[in-house]
Length: 454
Image (cartoon, rainbow, N blue to C red; front, side, top):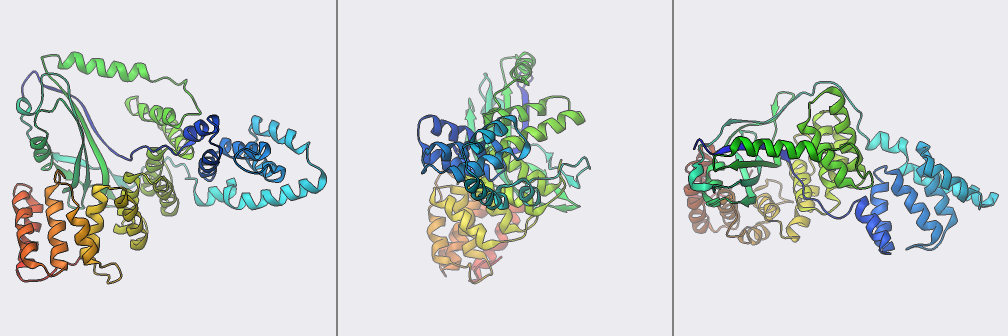
């Protein structure tokens, strides 16, 4: 590496794109008098145990905003929000109850019992809220076996270059479905992708068993012009200066970013607890990335007691936002069945939602499943071929794209086409060790006029 080129920082994390369906967007909709939209969003976060959302729903029923005015429903929601004895909820509860006669109070109490069955703390503790744990998780995190030698002078400018690559990792440590998310001052992004595709990974292990990973993002900044040390210090200063314990508690993005900022602080026991609490708070407010983090931490038993059902509940809460990355992650884990109970039908449903929103990775995964799954109820060669043909020409992981097309062609009995496509896959994979061997095995299968079935 050129002595003037320095890596500022690089890190990997599970990634899910933000969507506007959280407490902040609900509040904005309310303030702009989009009451039906606000009500729908408040109910989504209320179902996650967010007490302010429950209170807001009650106030909207009380005022008749976006719904018919209803003192019974208003009282029930406000009573529910006061379950934790929050001073504001208690104050408003007392005001509203003073306006009800005895018969209305009885009806409000009946309605409260109905809401408590789905939105109350007791129900949520049993089905959603993770249990904090200080135990060392049985999870070994992924690490790089070796990093490819990147010709920095060819690929990067003399300024600050930055890139992010999103990828999956199979249980053998091979990168798959990689996508370049960000490329700033990178002169040769195609060559960069080719080098990064050769990264060797030691997969995550849970209780000694290797796990597949999905939607991991590797991010790196590289500096030039002999200012590496200075620029590194500038970045670290920015991280320190932008972190403040005083922030807007009504904004889930702020809470999430402060939780992330704690990654750059000394990881004491207290700091770890603060980060976990902040992340959980943002998750309850509908923040998709935070929900994904809570889901995976609960599934892995990192910071929480390991709980498959609660982890899956958070994963599906993130997918409910219709965010493509969350849909893809939830579908992948449901299909693989490694850390959640397998539900291939639900996995296909989620992938179809993302595919309908033109998410390329979801199209590729769905096409592969429909072309190769042994379950005849899932097997759909015609649809698989249609999806495989829709792969964008600039899809970075050309091995996956061409292998998926070949599998779909073989499933439809188009073996000459499958052989031609798989030969391209072999050519693309020739410098990627295990994937090269896999590609040759599949090519031999198609030459024998046999479809590939998982």
